[in-house]
Image 1 (tube, helix red, strand yellow):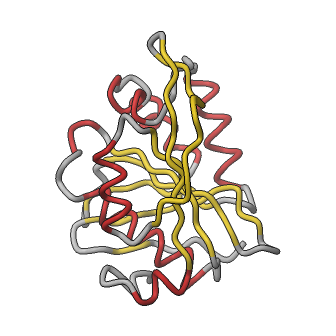
Image 2 (spheres, rainbow, N blue to C red):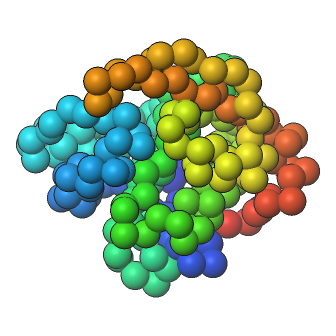
Image 3 (cartoon, rainbow, N blue to C red):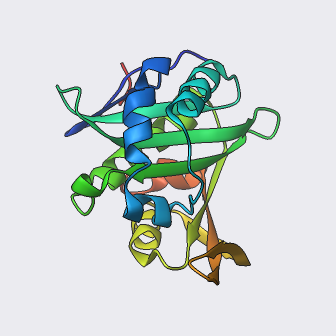
Length: 188
């Protein structure tokens, strides 16, 4: 895995997750709307989150980043490129923004930064993600950033007494490089 540099945007800085981020990650697990939108329903102890943070910080097949406000250490979320398949140059993407910071364009900026890192630094060719059908706002953001709908995974999540489907979306390297939202040179 290449070095994980700081990623700088107009309003955000993304930095690699470290074990000491466990406190912020643990606190974010109490946000009900964020948990629902990410399909997370398990309960975790602080110790479990600490172990998780230590493990993923050292992993070779993923890049976990903490999203902070630019020139600040204020935690507003996390963005992750995971399940990296180096042979096929593909990976998955997920993001979670703290409830206090949604609908302010931070998710779009963080995703642009992460895609620039994925394609321009890691040399990946394809990024895919899943967005639950009850989250049309996120789907719209991904489409705005150039992701294409590939299909639907029917009834993949059972939450609140009912099944929910997920839309599978992807972005290819050449699509990113020709898309209007391309942001090169965002790493230091």
